[in-house]
Image (cartoon, rainbow, N blue to C red; front, top):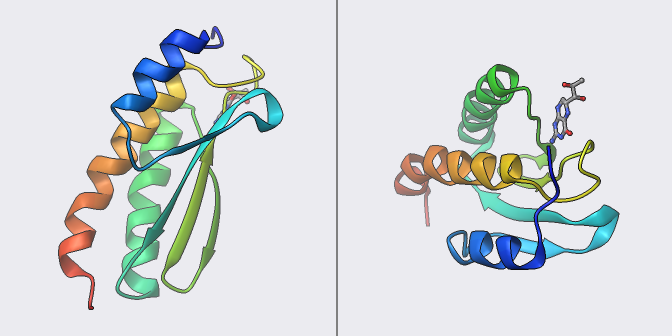
Length: 104
Ligand SMILES: C[C@H](O)[C@H](O)[C@H]1CNC2=NC(N)=NC(=O)C2=N1
């Protein structure tokens, strides 16, 4: 898997406004998500995990109660690849139904 060029990365990130780019570890993107409670957070993580296993691309993540912080990078590419952008899109889509359930 090829690492994205600066132009490819900028074009890709323009379609992922919730994700922040960091040059750490050759390049990665992260997003922080909030849920109504732990059950909702873990239900979401289960859906992401099933997709990650199917596509052999796995998130680095941190969960405490209703918060999930996710980082995506591609080891083979030593930075950001198309696979990270594809995974970020899926994560955004899977998160959407949970935002409606969030208690404010
Ligand atoms: C051997 C296996 O295919 C690789 O280690 C896969 C597994 N999951 C992965 N996940 C992520 N995020 N980046 C990778 O480069 C990666 N590589």
